[in-house]
Image 1: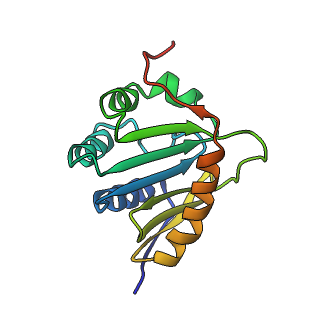
Image 2: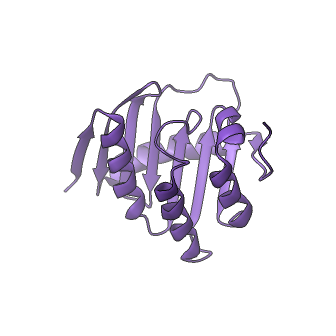
Image 3: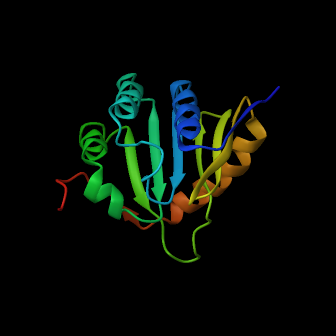
Length: 159
């Protein structure tokens, strides 16, 4: 049975995201506008992602963004993680056509999903043990991932 947790505030969103990411064992897929929300540059989140990567080469983090400006200017720790764990972690920038959906989501393994309904709002839901939701969003993610022309290379921040 699927377990759902609704969130409305940035704090609730970050807590749900930490819970979901902490339960990942093989695969993390992140579809986000630019990663500027969600605390992806916070030390705790970086540790969580780093610990996931340390668990072995069979793990994978794929991040698909519409815009990499925030990432390349403000996410030095995440870019460092990419340089260290490039064999486990990959970030791509989707093509601008067709226009990207306005939602954001995170998928873990084949059973966990966190979805924000709009990129400009933290309101959303996290579902655990929700294979159907993961399959539906996973098809969309994988389709856009394959079409994404831009791959983010680890490099020093351009200020």
